[in-house]
Image (cartoon, rainbow, N blue to C red; front, side, top):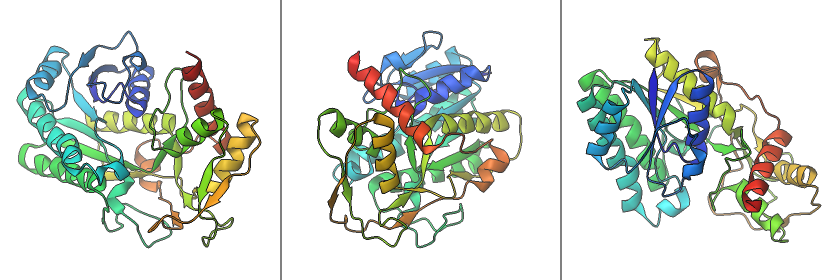
Amino acid sequence: MTWLVTGGAGYIGAHVVRALEDAGLGAVVVDDLSSGFASFVPESVPFVRGSILDRELLTDALRTHDVDGVIHVAGFKYAGVSVERPLHTYEQNVTGTAVLLAAMQEAGVGRVVFSSSAAVYGTPDVDLVTEETPKAPESPYGESKLIGEWLLSDQGKAAGLRHTSLRYFNVVGSGFDDVYDASPHNLFPKVFQALLEGRTPRINGDDYPTPDGTNVRDYIHVQDLAVSHVAAARRLAQGEQVERAYNLGSGTGVSVGEIMAAMARVTGIAFEPEIGPRRPGDPARIVASGELAARDLDWRMRHSLDEMVSSAWEATRRAREA
């Protein structure tokens, strides 16, 4: 059985590809390398360089490699930037998903695992987000992910597409020394960059109603995430029942202050973070329940906070030294 992974040369996608291999499943990667790296793709995995907006390329890849299903990870993932580039965000995340689904229908491929986002919830007013929490995205990125879920649902009704969407919050860590998070917008890379350049990392607000005054968020290890993508693919392939969407969350969360302490502890670089003002609209706590995913998708938090930090730090240092 072979699965096509869109965005398989990216940070998350590359972990999914390797998890498929570890599970004894075949993988094919389609990626335009706009944010990914060809070196992230194992030599044993066929790599098709191209855009998910290219229907002919996708259809050919699906047919040539006798693909059984798709894990759709590709997309424009920068929520903040999406506010400044809404048309680009919708083109990549909405049009791209529609083109992919059309190529799948043409090639007779009827299973897809969609990489969605907790951004579909916006700023929920509950302590623990479940799959039933109202959807209120606050950025073009979040809106585009919710529309992606709608597209899958509608294609399921119209053409029998079997699908599920995985919603997750902050993905960190690394399962391999040669795969790292290169995003300039994510917390871990930003802190590492500051430390490596001799700058002091910054916390936005320390007066929230949380145990240490800093924001509490869900941080999950990328390898745990990848395992659940594979579990979802297996369920779809075996005809087992799946939910339309699953949260991949810790149920407890971790504060930004705790992350900063772990960063200092793991890197051996002692620092006290600078404290800046709150960012407007930044909620005190957003944490998701992962109960449904634990039931169906082998989801669990297998890594401690220090393990998340240390694995990401080693991969980042190796990339910097290469």
